[in-house]
Image (cartoon, rainbow, N blue to C red; front, side, top):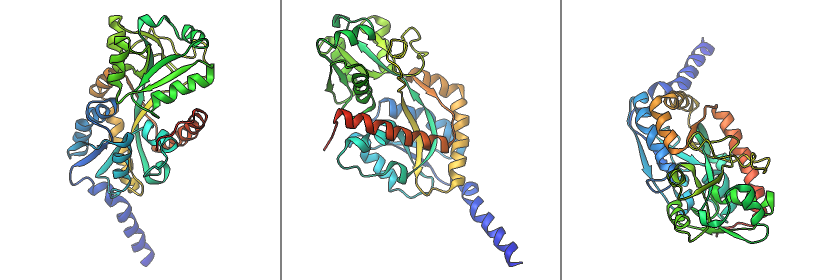
Length: 316
């Protein structure tokens, strides 16, 4: 009798969190300022996810320190399912190697919930740069240096360029900006010849002819600019890099809550509403399990550690 009663109580403890949650609004902390790719990827899913959960889902921007401040806030939050993180690869798998001090442990402090998608990156050039393809750039950059802009030091676009340098020997000199917008403006204006950025930010300039698309570093071409070849098609192989976004919860969040969130987010990502808006952002929705997402995070942590070390990138 005692054994049976114990089993019943155990089942109640296990299932109660999923049945009772959520009883109030859920917050998604975005560790960057409003308006960028990471912020918009959260805003697109907030309303439809709230409709699925029966509670409002609100986004809260806590920018600063390359995403570390907002990320730390979620790491220290109660693991009750009401505070989530819009995770970004630049913060979770690159910052730990770039920053001298990091206020969180990516593997220890977070539980992966759902990968939302991969954002395609792109290398674009001012027409006056004198290169019209990645092959031409690599060849020219072996005899003279080319400057390239990114949204800052140690983010995914910066590391893609460093990886390209390491794979080809091209002389590429980094010019960090405080955001991708200013970098794009300068390459359009001819102040710098190249910029690595998200495809969503650059495609209007490519369509208008103000910038030339040299290549995308992902494994396949982007549906947003299908005529632009991949780095591998341009002779730099292997090369498969995109920038992912996903939802994470504080470690020790009850498993039933993680499973409920993953289930509802899967439905949301399959909706036409989200597909269309993610398409505008250049994000390809991805459906994998929380466990598989966690393994991808660990793989990326190891991969970028090698690139950062070889490039000697450090932020104090």
